[in-house]
Picture 1 (cartoon, rainbow, N blue to C red):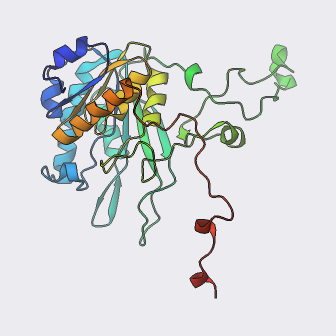
Picture 2 (picture 1 turned 90 degrees about the horizontal axis):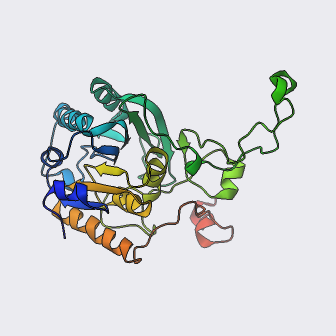
Picture 3 (picture 1 turned 180 degrees about the vertical axis):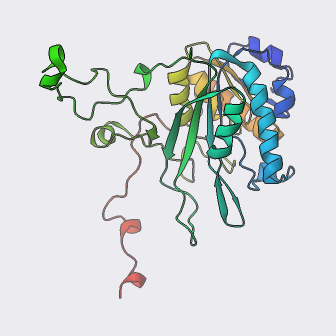
Length: 313
């Protein structure tokens, strides 16, 4: 069931999703009650959920500025925002959305802590420019007293045997790394142990055909990407907000990690889909790509890895 009162949701133990206009719903949330916003907003590029709300680029930025202004009131002083964006494209001209959003958040009093690069393997192929294979996650904080839990998101050391040089004084000869693992850096690909050891990157595939989490949503957010943000920037039982929740990935990640939260979506079908997926998760029936699972690589000898006869001259 989609709850109708946001105040009820804030008292709930588990994340949930409500249908409605983001701005209207945000007005019902208690100021300074949100620990983390994890969100991938619409890009205003004509996706199915944008077609009844066509805006010029200036109108789009004005609308999003209103949303960010509301978030600035709702986020705690110790809270953060992870804003995942790609590009706005109009008649072949590309605008990286992280550029205007940086200015919007800065004007609303937020501080940028990281511009995280999320690289993925698949996407729409282009023939008049290079094919896009990454998007960005902008991590903003409300103040300097923010939460950052590095240990839950560390990755194995690339060179665990490396030691401090003689110039380090008392530390000379001691292991230079942290036995708990290394900082995953701001370039995320989300991969498993073998790739962590060989490359200082993470490998999270985007949600395309064949991905176990795939639904009918055209721009689906992977649960694993939201997980890292939630693990690093919140504590158990904290409140996570997503004003454009889509298929509910951020709320599923919050539920998986013992956080409460609220997701909002104006599309009744997607709001129902997100709530259905949450119920499937709680019932242990939702298909989720395991965190850290290796990205599938081509196997030599498979038909799809062979050069077609038509290409051979």
